[in-house]
Image (cartoon, rainbow, N blue to C red):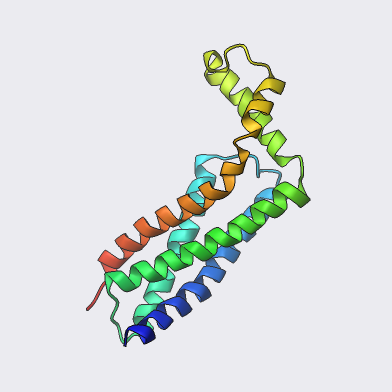
Length: 171
């Protein structure tokens, strides 16, 4: 019975993960075409989080319906974290393509915007560092973008899945 249950949660995680990831990619591409992909605003983060949450809710409810109205917290966690993993993988691929092929100067522009934002809000933090020094010092940490996407997506997916599981569970 455990193998059948695992197969079911994986099926729903993959199916709804691809759907949710595709929705997130459509939003990211829309931001790119609107030249708003540099803006890391709270509203953009909320929309991305909402896309992931809705995908997890729909996947868990679909699993529950297909499982004769039953879902455990464990099944909700497996389904939701699976959805989040698919979303993270799709986000990683998009980010890699954006940074390395679509807009190779993307990271330099992000660092430049970050420099001017920091200069405006916390001028003492830059310790009389100019833009070129800031960019050169910060470039060595840009690799962290990829694991950060994975960690944040999985962490929020875990929390969201737990909450959804607690609300909709039926043993």
